[in-house]
Length: 73
Image (cartoon, rainbow, N blue to C red; front, side):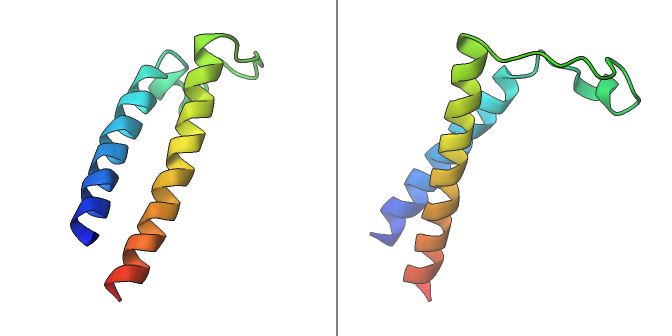
């Protein structure tokens, strides 16, 4: 069971990386240096779905990591 949890965690981490990279049409590194100041815009369509999926998968990854640590201890 421990090995299967680790495999699921690897799959979730790769999926999270892909989802985060797909959201890269924002400010990027320009936001660090003050580019694209205070423009607020709402997320719609695919962008909103990617954002919600990223939050959901990150929570699932966190809970799975806690379960894996609890099982291994």
